[in-house]
Length: 181
Figure (cartoon, rainbow, N blue to C red):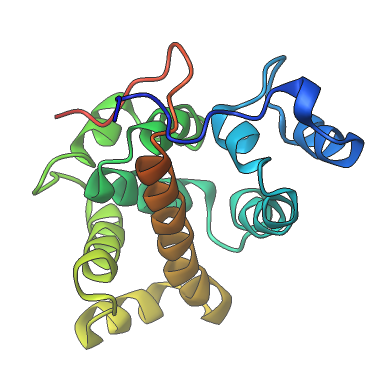
């Protein structure tokens, strides 16, 4: 077994018109992202998953900053270099400094109390599969019901993505760094 992708991105010549149109809608530049082009091997799944992920990413109830703290911590917990690399820019746009972003990869990040609560939530969901009562109570004091649901869903969604990225060995595009180690 090599270190390359286990399933390579689907080449444009092998895409049916609906899959090509879907991939065009998911582009964030001129090139296909390897994640989406790989999942294009399963177009029905890609279509439904991208709608769910898109809602959390672009239309959710959490602030962009809170969402990106959860995603980067999940990427660090799962060693998902691809996920980390793509979300660093989103986290920066959401107001996180490069120092704050780097801290999220550390075992005991030195972050402010609001981010520390999100880190604790992401860590508990990662290690235990459930939020503890004290963490839930702290989150419930800060967030409404939709946001509480999204805390769990964002971490779960990005675990799903990380497990897929890591298991399929989807390669990062040039210029995207992995989780700092």
